[in-house]
Length: 334
Figure (cartoon, rainbow, N blue to C red):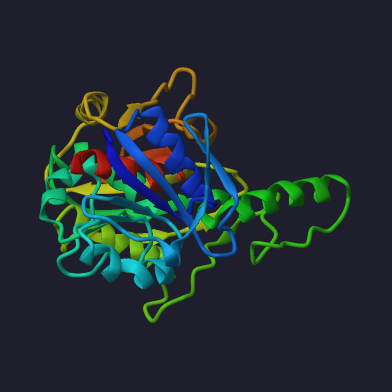
């Protein structure tokens, strides 16, 4: 059998479906594909490279040496099979929050710290979607000068809450346009024609879980625990692709042109910064593509020392924010 045995855990979810797309589009060397899900979904069908495959029950799956396991079925699920998979010699690329901050588990963005893939002990963590989109956009700028502080506001799409939330947004919009009061099904509040503070639980420091994840994970990915980060995460009525407004404070002055040039020549990002046409990153343009769009690059006019920039970024939450990054990690493994 040529190619590698690849399993997708949570193949029926929004991210699992995009993992299938990414493997196919990037012509990943798959010898055998094992679609895995809970017993509830076992027996259903998925299509990969024109072939219909039957979803298998995760609990009954026998992992093999060298198997690559792309997992996106929730933190509690990965915890149930972690030891079983690693003991068999498989390598897990985990898209959940379960192990990202665990000591000894590499948290990887290939364009930023791809060298960390080689340090794994059977498990590599895929970052939070906002942290992934943020760090791939910031890394070219960080290389110009160390970043001291970030102030971030996010504009997060329904896709971040899964396929059911995307369907919920569509039905809510229809209900509003028909003059009805929408009844949210997969979300805590009405998202149609509304925005709300990300509904992750508020933690002891007053920030919610999503915000605290971005802070901790950005520091780990950059291997810089001293970066000051303040962040507000907000859910907006966009189907797919997150956006972030970022205020950056550097250690040394960085000009707008230096920043533009760094983005132009960096992997994984695309400069969209047309002041004349007032054309900048938009989630609609970022949806379905691999690159994170970066623009609206301007000096922070509240400073006189040249050490501040403002940028706006948009990236596909299901691709670079999740599935694509996991597949890129798998590419490095092989």
